[in-house]
Structures are given as structure tokens and as C-alpha cells.
Length: 457
Image 1 (cartoon, rainbow, N blue to C red):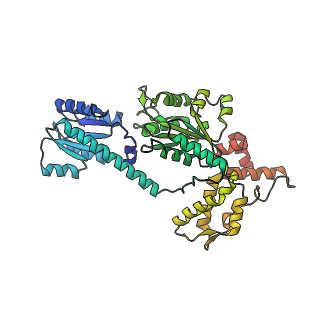
Image 2 (cartoon, helix red, strand yellow):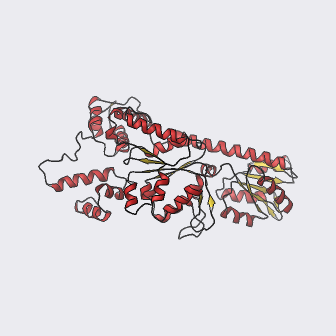
């Protein structure tokens, strides 16, 4: 468990495990924790009980006695840390000395409290613990931003319709309303979703993204809600899921139109009651999350075809924002291209790079079927392979006409050539074969046969 994953679970509440062989210490410490701002205490009198609770519950920190009868608390601390534990561990001890304090900290303890202690010491420790975890989460988030592998998308536009879409999105960000983002693949829906989260009151909490088409139904449900150990073949340990990780934050479901029908009522329950169950459990759990979804499908048609629940559809589209394809953003093309170029040129230590006039003309006349994602990938490739200080049209490998392999509609060539060129282009730009089949309006089996006949396998 990395620090960031652990910290994502920290919200207004903390679950703390107290491990002590003295019943009165367990009782008084648990009562103090349970009455201190809504935190919850779990108790164990030995390491065996502690292991069971750690396996079954989402514990954020551990209060551990230095001496557990015949067991050594510091040995248990070392064992936990050797197994990858990153939860803060606070040591209780009646054998206070500078030497024992130093030993505890050297072996990985977060803090140290001398017995006997009073409730105020526990409450102070909880505040320190909350601050530490919050600061660690911020550090991890900043490190993630500085090490980003993808260029930022320019959230400005000279196109009035897009500026209106941004205005609606950022105004809605201040509410808890669910937002549905519409538009073709590659238009920046996931970037806008993150910007909405950053502009919301939930910005200090996690933003969690899940791509619905990327997993099977079983794995997607587990990814969303988590699973209990043994819930299915291969479930060898407890998993808490993205919904739990996003508590008090935002869940972004990309390509929501691909969400299997079997999971849709579970998502609706989460949105209506903030309640869900892990796979393999019947115990309801709570998660306060804001939902942002995106799709390039017509969800109304999916409802009419019986592939999407109508009640979920209306729950998702409280606010709808539509992003246009890049072809309809002529006024923004140069700004976007130059921002991508600056990002990749800096990464390649080539800050002098710029576009020549022919390259700029090619950027303006190309039809961009893959939208922003295609532009980003083409410019990254050009930065890597180009020579000299200017990116040329040849470096970009763009055709100014909406054609492929030199073919165009109405040209005196067999239809099979046009079909082959079109299939090749769609396969290059699509997010996988299922996505390509939807664009071509054929099933995946038909696409497989066509790929085989064209020698594309």
C-alpha cells in the first residue's frame, strides 16, 4: 500500500485499530476515539486478532502496545512494515525512556505515547495524525503533477460554443450535481472532468477515474466497489475499490455507455443513497462521492434499445456539457498545437522547436478524426523524429484532405479500396477494436473478418 493510496482513504473520519492486552486501556482509548470527531475505533488484544481486523476492515492507523503479554509490539510493527504496511503506527508503552522511544521510531513508529495517558493526549495525537496524513497526500499529489506524462489541455477557446460549455461546467462544479460530458473520443472529456473536480468544494479529496470499456463486467464491478477475499477465483486478498478511495471526492466514469446492465442498478444505488456493497459481501457500506461521467454514445438511443437504464440516465444528466470535435475548433488549432509542441519539446530538451508555415497550414487543413488525442500523438512523434529547429509538414505526416492513402470520395477506384483505407484509418484512431467496430457500425466479429481479409491481423 503506497502512501498516496492510503491517504486517499482519509476523509473526515478515520478508522483506528487499538492493539493492547489490557481491557481497560482498550475500552477507554476506544471511547475517546469514538467521541472525537466521528472517528471509529477497532480493538484487538493480540496480534492474531489484529491481523484479522486489518484483513477485514479499512484501517487508517494503528495504536500498538509495546508489550502484548508474551508478544513484543515492536516485533509486530517490524513484521507489518516488512509486509508493505504504510499506515502510521503509534506505540503505547509503560516502559518510557529515551532509549525505548528512539528504538520505536527507528523501527518505523509514527509516534510514541507513554502510559498511563489521559484522553486529551489521545485527542491531540489524532489531530497530529490527521495533519500528517493530509500533508503527505498533498505532497504525493504535487509529485504526481510534476511528473505528469501527458501535456495539459488548454482550457481556453476562441470558439463561443466551447466557451459556453466551459462556463456551464465550471459553474456546475460548485454544486454536487452529477455532470454528463458528451463528445467524440479524444475531445478532452477526462481533462474537463478533472478541472471540474479542482474547481469544486471536493478538490482537497481524491479524483478517481475509471474507464468502463477497459475491463470485463466482473473486474469492472470489483474495480468500482471492491471485493472480499475469496469473492471469486483470484480474489486472494481484500480490495476496497475506487468508490471507497474517492470518498468525499469525485468519481469519473469514462465511456459510461459501456457500463454493463448488471452494474447499472448498483451505480444508481450509490448515487441515490451513497451506499454500495463490495463483491462477495452483503454488508452495505457508505461513500459520499460526486459523479461525473462521459460518453461518445447517444445514451437516449441506448435507453430506447434497452441497453441503458432510463432512471440512471436521468440521474446522470442533471447537467450536460457537450464538447465539439477538433474539426469544429478552427480558431483554437494553432494554440493547441503550440501548447503540445512546447510540452514535448521541453521533455526532449529541445525548447527551440517551432512549426514552419507549411506545418501550420497542414494543421489547419487536416480533418482530425482522432481529435485532441490524435494531435497530441502526432506532435509527440514529430518532436522525437524531426531534425533541425523547425517541425515540417513532412514531420507531421498529415494529409490536408479528408482522405486516406491518397484516396477520396468520388475517385475512380473500386469501393473495396475506399473501404480498406477507411478501416485502416479508423483502426489507427480508435481506442481498441470494440470502439472501432462501433464507429464502423459493425459487430466485432465482422471487423475481425474484414481485418483478416485485408491482411491487418
